[in-house]
Length: 214
Picture 1 (cartoon, helix red, strand yellow):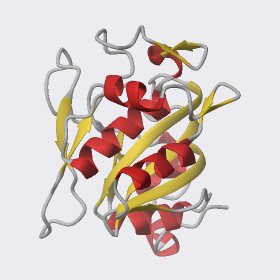
Picture 2 (cartoon, rainbow, N blue to C red):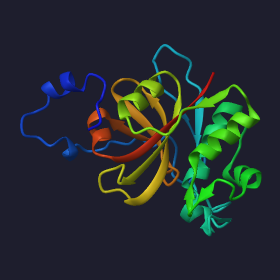
Picture 3 (cartoon, rainbow, N blue to C red):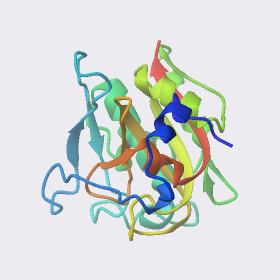
Picture 4 (cartoon, one colour):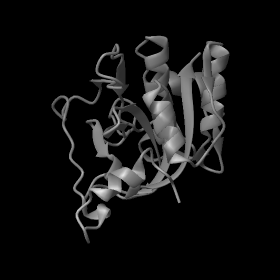
């Protein structure tokens, strides 16, 4: 069972009998959905600098049809698209999924799946100050690392949003946490998804990988 920071204290105040998974997921579009690439502020702490993390869509018509992992980026490019977001953030360059695909090709595809440790190693090779963790499953650790300024590659299944798209297996990028809400960049969503701690527990998370600049 995944433990959250101060989860016990948090649940004491919950309304008796209410299922936490009934909570609605509230989202706040950052820009009109017509714009496939958007900039969202990383709100780690209110009194800290807020670097920008872009949102790239794997379904963007400019690259969604490109071949990848025996399919196309629009079908199988969630991990590569998240890696492009992360590398844009760390490098300060506008590094789209096209640039990432040109740089790595299918090198980090295993059995049709995006192999995120491979993307982490590639980023470290480009910039030795960028470090990453091993794969882990502890959401409490993910939230601690996120609050400390890391970005988090997260594998999940099912839905992020109530009534939203259901994924059989999907990679998203966690970009911010302020002890109450987590900001998620989903490469299939044109806006940042905001999840409360309650809502985080409703997501079927598989694994996490923390990435940070040392």
